[in-house]
Structure formats: structure tokens, C-alpha cells
Image (cartoon, rainbow, N blue to C red; front, top):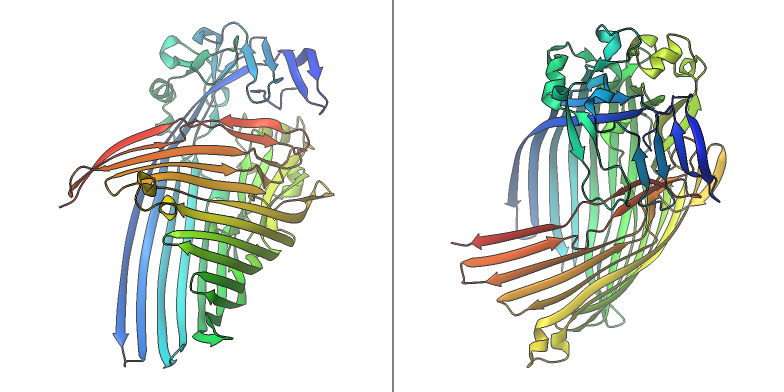
Amino acid sequence: MLLRSEEDTIDISNYVIDGDNNVISAELDNAYVRTERYHRESETEFYQISANIDHEFSDVFRGTLRGGLSRSDADIPIETSLMFDDRADGYTYDYSDMKSPLLVFGPGIDDPAAFEFAEFRDRPSFLTNKFRTVALDLEWDVADGFQLASGAFYRRFDFDTIGYRRDGVYCQEFDCAPGATGAPVTDDLAEIFDLGDAGQPAGNTNSWVVPNLDAATDFIDLYGRERVLQQGEQRDVTEEVKGGWLQANYETSLFGMRVTGNAGIRYAKTDQTSGGFLSGTYLTVERSYDDWLPAMNVNIFPADNLILRGAIAKVMTRPSLGSLTPGGSVDQFNFRISSGNPYIDPYRATNYDVALEWYFAPGALASIALFAKDIVSFPLGTSTEGTWADSGLPTSLLTPGTPVYDAIVNGTDPDREFEFRTTGNGPGASLKGVEFGLNLPFSVFSESSTLRHFGVLGNVTLIDSEVDYTVSGDVYTRPLLGLSKKSANGTVYYDDGKLSIRVSAAYRGGYLTGTSGNSNIFEGFGSSLNLDAAIRYQVTDQIEVSLDGTNLTDDYRYRWTDDFARRNYENNHFGRVIMAGVRFKL
């Protein structure tokens, strides 16, 4: 709602509180408006080299040696935000329609003279990822229907990042007139932003002043200012993984039925070194853990066109390297401290799968699959509250003129609570589900008519999961984060070898993304339905033309906060994309 949370002088009137205890609409005075111009320039360089050697030692014994390395430099030399403030009274909002709220600003919103140039930020950062690997795989055909395979591997991942800031409050960095909170905004420093048609209701404010990027940065010589290293944004992680595996592959018969499958085990030892600043001191944290990961798969063929599959496996996925570093950063406007955690455990689970596949005609398939997961641990974002003193961080990290600096250094609110965000080890979880699949070419019904060129394919997945999350001291049982209870995909197609037409729909039910914060209980996304289409036409053996359309219905993505009230957090749409192309083949 574009409200500065640290402003305690706002007067509210004509408000309406709904059944979820939301102030769903109101008129506000003494609430000033902030407009922002955001600009980022990024560049990425990627290098990769790999090699592979195969050798047959004999007719029954062979091996493969492979290795490679890669490096990615993802730099953001400029990440600029410029802020104008209008301290005139008058702001009205109405969220009766949560997905399309009415926002009305007072007079002067499109007049540069009503604004002051209040704050500026530039936050360049530089990130490097490196990867090195070598592996040896061996295969031995012991006998007909039985093979042994084994291997050893080594991998090393390196992550390091560093960040700087050129942040400032105008009246702290430059001279201001008495009583002013920024530099007067002239026509040269500003431009008018026009919202256009974004689905907003009638009467909404659709045009307002924003900073002119070039003029405003030149006005304060932003890029000529010295950039200051941010200790919390200088971090690195090295992760080395060593291990090996052994697997037996077999093919036999049981009660007259063909049976194939494999069984094996993988061992991995992980050595992790994380570095980062904490309370002004650069810390290095070393950690090691290992995993034994057995797995077994079996395929039974009751008939030539019927396969019963079963599998059980222990699996693990390591956390992202960026979340494993100590230290972090301070949001000096929203009273938030974010940090990493070098002691996060990997995602660990045992998977159980069984599926029945029926190939009832050439190119046709009907299937049903049951699956379950017993999840031991997984990384989970956590949020707690405390004071600046609880953080142990030095006040030298704070920028004069920011709300946090004013509260802590100037002492206007030294006991103000901060939100501490990090990643921790989530509790155990259970998951079970079923998936139905169908691939039906209409040639099943007729080989002679045009109908044979049509077909449909799709799947439906239903999942039930339970996790006990602790939020603000209370326990809530909810589905696993990022997991939809229902999803489905379907395609109708025509393909005669020369002309191909496909129309596809993808549905995903709503899902949770985090446990949230600021006294909200969870946050997540609503359901979505995307419609895509593709047309291909083979003009000659060498020339093909195509027309592709994605998100043809321009579906909105609704993001909410608080599981009980489902308040609007974002309601975005990204538009339709239509692409035409021509492909030549020599």
C-alpha cells in the first residue's frame, strides 16, 4: 500500500475492517508518498571445458573416464535506486477487491515541484561460481543377464561473492535548506510514469512522478562516489564431495515373466568450508558429513505390453551454497537482518515408487503411479524477532539518515524489534501421491481417416503432504513448501508429418512458499492455468516455419500473505508471448 512502516504520525479515517481483521479500506492523512526508480545492469561470463575417454579392456569389461571444469562470473556493476518523497497529505486505498485494489493519491502526484530528492542507493555486487569434477565408471558383464558396475567421483564447488554500497540520505550527504528533507525536484530531474492498462479499477491514480535516471544520478554524481564494502555481503563457500558407488544390473524370469532391474549403493563424503563476517570478524566454519544412499529398482513384465515398476531409494540434495555462509546483511529501512547458516543439513529422504504402464497400442500409453516420501530433513527459512543488541552487530554497519540509524545510533527507539531471517533445518515430513498419465494417438481408432493424425496426452497428479511448522511459537500442520496438492497438464495435437499443431494447458494448484514474518502466518501463491500453442509447417525438406504462443490467456500470478486472511502481496501478469521463426537445414 506504499506506506512507510516507520511513520507513526499517520491519521486514519473512514476505515473499514473486514472479517479477517484487515483494514480493507481507509483514507490517510500525514502519509507521504515515495516514488522510486530502479535500474540494474548485469553481465555474465561462462566458461566450460570437459573431456571424456571410453576404453574397452575386453569384450566384457569397459570403462569411462570423464572430467571437466567450469566458471561463471555474474557481475552487477550497477544496481541503483533513486527515491523522491512527496509529504503532501492525502492517500486513499480500497482492497475490497483484493486482486485489483483502488489506490488514489492526493494532488501533486504528477507535479515534480511537490517532491524532494530524498534518498539514493547503488549496490554493485560480484559473484563467482566454479565447478571441477572427475569420475571413473567401470562395467563388467559377469554373465548373461547380470552386470556389475562401479565408480568413483570427486567434485568441488566454489562460491564467493562481494558487495558494495553507495547509499545515502540526501540531507545527510549534502546541504539542505532549513526544514527540508531533500533537494527540490525540478522538471529536469523527473519524468512521468504512466501505468497504462494493468487491470486497475476506474478512478485509480495511473500517472505519477519518478526520478529521471541519468539526470538524477548526474545531479549527485552517484557513480563518482566511493563505494563502501559491505562486510555481510563478502562471503564464500567451498564444498568438496568424494565418493563411490556399486551397482548390480540384472535380467531374469520369474514365474514365466521377464524381470529386469538393478540394486546398488552410493557413498558420498562432503567437506564444507564457509566464510563470512559476523559481528565485524571474518569467520571460517569447517564441517564434514557423509551419506550412504542405497537404491533398488525392479521392472516386471506380466505381458509384452504391460510393465509393473517398483523402486525404493535413499536420496539427498545439498543446500544452495549461498545459504551456507555465516554473516549477512541489514535492511536499514524495514528493520530486518538476513543471514546465512553454515550448519544447514541437506534435504534427505527415502523415496518409494510403484507404477503400472500399459502400452495398449502403437505409440499409446496409459499409466498410474503411486509414490511416497519419508523426508528426514530439509532447509527451511526461519524468522524470529529481537533487538539490535541481540544481533551482536556493530553500529558501524549503519548508514546515517536511515530509519535504523535514527532508532539505534540516535537513540530514538533503541529497543525497536528487528526481524531476523535465516535458513534452518526443517522438521521431518511425509508425502504421498498418485499420478495418472495418458498418451492417446487417435490412430488407435482409425488408420485410414484424417483422425489418425490427431491425439491427446496428459497427466494429473494428486499429492498429500504434512509438515509441522513452528511459527511465532505455535505449531501449524501444512503441506510441504513449494508443493501443490493438485496439478495437471494436457495437450491436444495434430501431426501429419508436414503440419504440426499443438495446444497445451498446464494447471497448478496453490502452494506455500515460506513461513512468512511480520506476524503473518505463511505466504504463498494461488492456483494458475497457462495455455500455450505451437504450429510447425514443413515447407520443404530444408525449410520449416513456426509460430509459438505462450501464456495465451495472460494468466495472473496471485501471491498472498497470511494463510488465514490471504492478503494481496502481489498480483502479477507477464503478458502473452508470440514468436515466429524459420529454420533452415542444409
